[in-house]
Length: 408
Image (cartoon, rainbow, N blue to C red; front, side):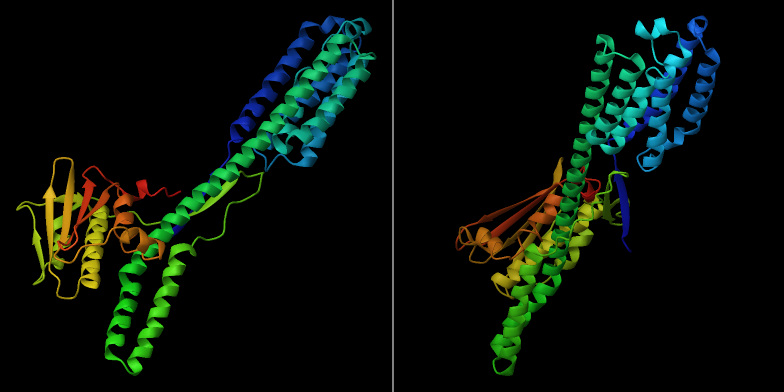
């Protein structure tokens, strides 16, 4: 079944845009309410009414523009800031001189902060500094003198907007870092899965060709040598060369984007583990288990059976084609334990670590990697001269192996 690519968009700033949308509407109503309460004190109320009409239409008509960074374009921000500055500069013409000198609110009042915050969320602290500085200059011109309350309000807007802009920039950088980390994790798990499949198939065949051809000698020996070289090269590639380049989007207007390969859903339900292990039984392999079915989630059961197959491959490869092996299946209350034992010479101490360092993935990926992905564990017990025992343990409550693989 073909896999499909799933796109996940990550944006921690989206809640800020929703909050900004509500803020603009509420502050517009607040500014109109302040004007209504002091209507009699305005020297040119018709000028204020005209401005509020423009402000209301503009605010409501441009709500989709502040729904996200992609729609909040530079031309929109420029016009939005111009309307805020126009309202500030029209205040001395519409309101009484006494109210202006006493620190009365400007026509747009706190609605102006919404325009500055849009700059901060869209472009970061530098854009916020530009917009807040323009507002500060307009407020000083409107008041005519740098009064204490005016300076206080200007500094408050300037600091707050720059701080929010800086936080947005940090959040975007964190998004990209997290998206890259998730993609690396997914790519690593995919590499491990491919490594197991290659080890179970291609590498085993190349190793067998090398052994058989070397034993035959003559021209076959050259074929064996080439097969050995290809085996080494493929092991090197599988060990560290399959992580793809990043596909994390750097577009700040859309948020970080992760493109992840999504595997098809595993078959639902459970299967009898004994049925999957039965094909391994034969003249040299003895299978023992409960007389009743041993149910396990289908995907987990397939991985466990593949790990058993990998363990038997190691027996044939390192002990010999005529080596005997025993498979024991135990259905415990909390999990299922499958033990694979052979009658070989055992594994020298430190050999497993050495093999993993050489890029040999039979134990690291085909056995331990599979068990780790389904929430289980693999333990190796070996005594020189008395064979090797591999104990594979899987919890019964495992549902979907992908849940523990760290896939995006």
